[in-house]
Length: 236
Image (cartoon, rainbow, N blue to C red; front, side, top):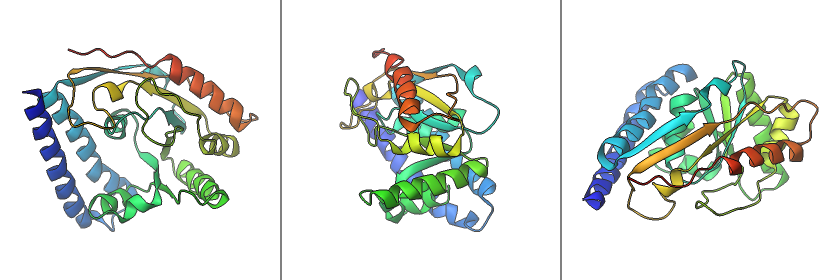
């Protein structure tokens, strides 16, 4: 039965992606706030459908730590789930993404309307400059920039070195960093079709001051919070 429910969710997500990509062309030339409010329900819908069909629930701890001024998010990356769900608690968001994703038919077109920080992976200093320039521009526009310092989805229990780009953006911009930890990879794994019933727990940490601090120091503090707040699986 869970396999059938997972299949229904996958079909629903594909259909909703196609619909929002096609319909989003209607607001293509509207200002960013309008485009964002138009497309954001797509993420909220998929989180809701996953809960209803597959029994993947969530709880959030630390919402009182979200600052009133703009900030950068450092979050661990285990699943597709957090790319949807974090939009429930933080808005508007600009994701740091591979530039190649913008060329994916339908999905990439809709993504480009959300003003992501699009960088060309593998281009070294050019990619870092793109991250800093575009990231600071988004922050000045009062758009929250979210970075996955691991660089890609990592299975629960796996440890990789954090990429330095996010830390450099924080150092150069001076905006505070809010660390976010979750365990979504247990329920919606990087590889695997099956979605597992259970409770995803999200921890939002206190803002990390970045002014006058080096990138490595900022990264280390964020990593310490994230790794210590990833909870074990709570299957149901």
